[in-house]
Image (tube, rainbow, N blue to C red; front, side, top):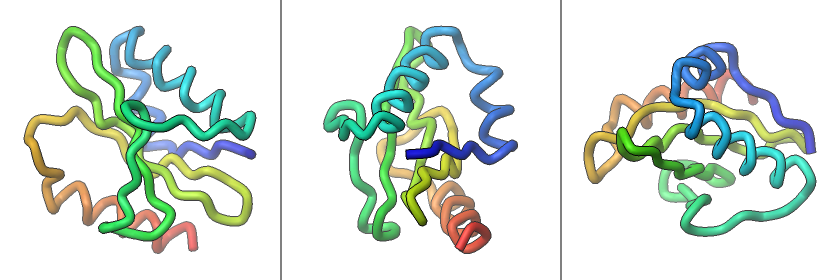
Length: 105
């Protein structure tokens, strides 16, 4: 399955540590080959939107709930990435994700 990364997200990822970038690359390669990684690396976010998932990685700086993606028309769209700082996802982050889903639909 094709992986499509939104340019804003690619910029965020490029500024992250090598460890984060490598862990994300590993998970994305598995998804591209059709494997379905599970917890602790992938968590569904169906309470926000159907078909939405979270890739969870961490490094010595902390957690990087970096990438959210949704499968549409046989592609995986990487919609958003950010450093996790709180237990719950802030509404601001949810709004960005939902806006980008609307843009690709």
